[in-house]
Length: 604
Image (cartoon, rainbow, N blue to C red; front, side, top):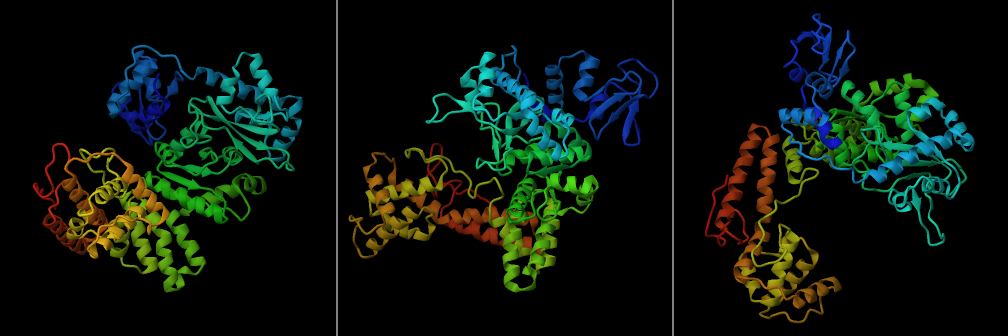
């Protein structure tokens, strides 16, 4: 079996015109390409390939599908074979499996499929009358419920459990999927979703992988919404509700709509906007953004217009930007969501709001103008902070450049200042400082600065004389990021200034004292302690220089010519200071490296 995610990535990268064009003589005709159909041997130009939708269709024999379907029909290959073939063409390696392995999660999938069918049957049966009435009030018919996989869980403690066990499904499977729950007050497990409307969450192969459930009794003090917990087949931070229905429309329309709830997705699909998806009860994630980016580079955000909704809008927008997706904000009327707005104003109202959508940065500026931030100096300073996350998140160079120009125009801030601030902080999903090679003789150092500080202080408490070396190197308490390490170093330094060695730690805070006690008790051995100490001390002392060099490189990507010249001069000065300090590729002596100062690599 080839994973769904891999198949979708290969399909997204494939050029359907190029691949099918190797077997058909295609000529451009408007937005599509036409030629004779190789599947039924026709002569006329009845075979059409649509590059936007990535599909083919013959208007004579009726054959249609995507690039995989064409190659399977024309070459007689199996689906895994054509996936590997197309994958090789687009540079994606598909693991070769000689034997088809059984799905290790087959029992889970069977239980989920049973539950989905059972919930749908309950909605259609006599116990589902109240749920059907609720759906009718929301404008949903029984046909809609069937189309979108809506079901109902009766207000019964063990109805699903009894039905599932009777078919041979094991209780442990139901518990693992979160369909059942346990309690200290109950002898037996019970149905998690009781008295709730059920929405099946499906993967791209349209298989149920989880459920979302909405309480129907408005008087209940139970949570309004419940979602299935994580399971081996469901990772909520990666999935998007409705993507199984929406993905083709998203690719065809070249846009997606992101909403907050299940009914909002369904309402938009019914209103002729079938490219809507929703998160699953958690904040929007980078994995979800990257998944969406496979289908489109433009997304509309339709969150609530209140304070929490705006914060969610801006956070999601920044995540989309970092994934290369351009976010636009649809401003909903106060107190409305897509479902309620479509029911009260009709689909036309929602279509009009899409037409009025604005870019994420422009939406932020609209709010800043409305709240008066751009009318005073202090307000503009705060406005810069409010816009900075979006400026940093933009991964598309052209869009980021437009954002910079717009911010300069609106706030009157020098472009150089903005560029410097952008480069001074890591982009979303990155770390502030590069990982260094591990240190020989010091266990578990890895690339962590906190671990480096810990080992430096370990050597200090064992040999307080080393503090004089640290002082000669210019190391100060401010160079420590860890508060406990900083406090201990400051105490040892003060004692050294008075010509004493610190052996009484009682004046330290409780956390710092516990930190020292832990270090004194460890039996770790450090080879070449003086060299290792100097390496860590230099690393801390000049770590800011390395960070600044990296920030300068980022700034130069955004800076204009005169600014670039000044940055280059600064980089040369920083580099010179590092060389004078005996900098090398890494301050940390390790396997295959020399001691600090013995190998001065040139850098620019």
